[in-house]
Image 1: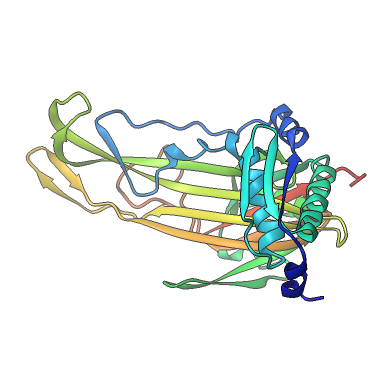
Image 2: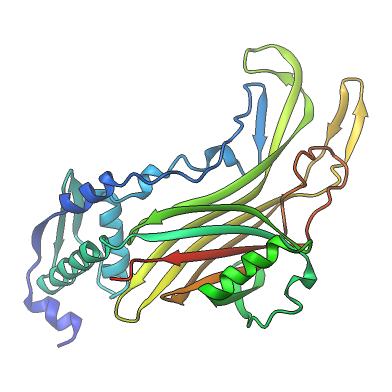
Length: 330
């Protein structure tokens, strides 16, 4: 029976789904935020471009709540299975109300039960930010695959590789004994099915942008701030049947062109910085027990303590090594 015929003999019904157990499970999680400390710009500063001061403010809302569960139902059931949008989908604390056809309600109930099962499997995600020179992989036998990303403004091809844990450990060990690579940042967090969080690390450059008024209304130097760094938004999707994890990634790599041009005035040198942004949205499926290496980015990290406008000595490339660990009972 096709969908149109089925709908013609089925009646819409309003069903209340109790989700307080899922919401409670998320509320009990005590996951630490990534270990970053942001230097918030003073009142007389203005942040131009990508604002890292806003990164992390939405982390608590990334846990399960009624509205996020409703969105998951829309994405994972209604949209994926080409069902029409629900006539009614709303929520109150602990409950979601959905008006749809009986066979769709069966799919929704099945999805929520699967979510409950998978919610018991925390995934430990580790993010490694690595700067490297071109010859770092010269002696490696890694197989890189092309990841083609296309939007209205650009075409991008990034190399990625799927590694076992032994090879991942080998790469991290090699970094310690070479001048051709540097482990810039390493952090870990725990995620459950449908949850998403950020890895991030940033630097900033303050510069004279002109003359203006400070936050207190006083005239004087107008100080601008631009950030550079990497933000990785990650959401794991666990599939028990195929025994794999899909890494849902939103990567933003922000660099400032160096040297920063400037011209002198009576009040000082006014800088003209140029912030470059690489954005990648991708879903990459990785078998259980394997890790993901994504390369091909510009490296935004200067040598520690170098905040000058002079050319910064940078590594030639930046790559992201994501490791996922799940309980053996999964």
